[in-house]
Amino acid sequence: MQRSRGIGLVFTEHLDYDYPSAGKEQFIFDPEAYWTAYEPLRAAGNLSLGVEMGMMASARKKNAAFVQRVPFDFVLGSIHFLECKDLYYPETFAGREKAEMYHEYFTVMRDEIYAHPFIDALAHIDYIARNATFAHPEISYGHFTGDIDAVLRALIETDTVIEINTRRSPRRAASRNSRPSAAATASSADAMSPSARMRTSPRASDETTTAHASSPMPLTSLSSPSVRGKCRFVTSEVIYCPLFLFLL
Image (cartoon, rainbow, N blue to C red; front, side, top):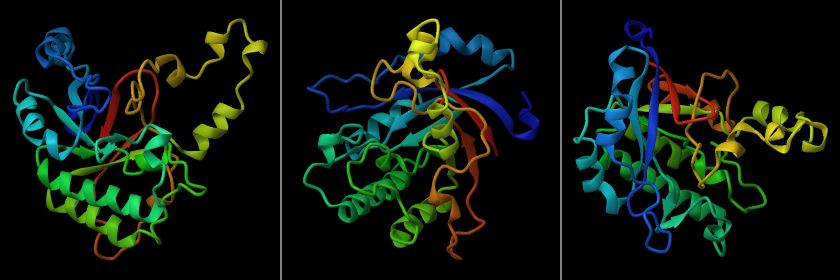
């Protein structure tokens, strides 16, 4: 690893306290066991160990306590829920208007950045658009300037990096569409995308990442004078397992 140059790989296991699924918490892991299993690789200098944690008001104290249990090298913060409803599911968007829901999303994101000053990076700022059922789900900076600027100011004021997540990049979509069908391959498993093979839960591989050059969405054209040039970025793309490449 090129740690002296600020380049490296880090595993980010997933944590989401208070996961709203019939009372079952499906995204919690044992950090001590995680450390025992992978710390030898960390000690050898091959990778760093981190966590991606879901940020919610109800989980603030638990998240803060969790990161104290082992010396994580990297803490990635995410917003996956609104009003304790999972943004992965279409029913979460039922009866909602895009403008007011996205405003709420960015407001929660800003508040949780300030409430989680120990995170190193904010993940997938556009997560809400992944599974939104609106006719035009994409996020335009021009339509949400004030909301997005508030998030970026929070990142700047807390010295938090913003992730450039290519999970939904046009280049990835084109790559998926160009793959042969299962009938044209030796087996359906071979035809499956890496993320499909790994998807054992709604976000099993969402933040699995590697370096990628393409921009994820119109948010990359941020141009507000109040925030331009002040944010730091990490580059990422979903592949096989919770892996993060950071460029700091």
